[in-house]
Length: 112
Length: 116
Image (cartoon, rainbow over all chains, first blue to last red; front, side, top):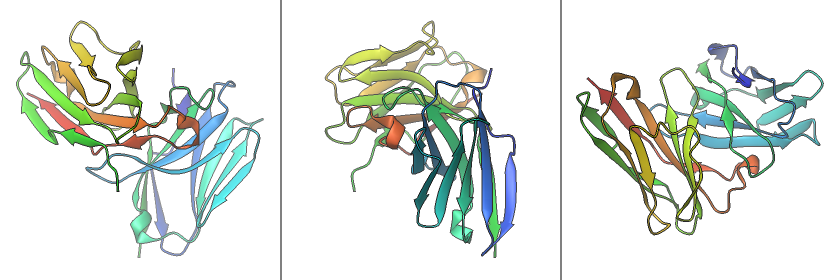
């Protein structure tokens, strides 16, 4: 039973436009949510996180929104750049020190 | 910049053979993790160490997988015998004190295993 779901395997966006990646979760005990980015043949790298006490967190071009009632979070990238093309994993944990549970990932392709 | 080192990057083996992966975490990181990522899936935790002690190995198939971190620094993950379904990327990650909820989890480049 998947506790973290990324229902879109892929997303294509034009350079300069907004990319919106979505993630749903089923475990109401999750209180930390993260996005990781992965290039081919490399390990995942941390992008941005949000705790359940907030509903928005921004870092430059990246913003994560959390809707606890819907058990849904999204990552917005504005503006999208070709270098953003990668697989994006949503992850969650129960408490800051607990194991991360990852989604299956969404492959983002940003075309020039 | 400090990195998590893993070797080998790529390993091709025949089923029933033994295979081993090595990981050297970022210096000073007490918590070390081994994840397995099957193509098209997200990383799944196999084992977590705090210093030299296993904290969580509930998802480690102990009939064929073993992991150790004898001196609390580098770690080895072994598979014996390898099966076709073990083909995956094996990712090592480390954390200073395990505070992963805020992004304090750093991955190595992974070891890609192909079992023929």
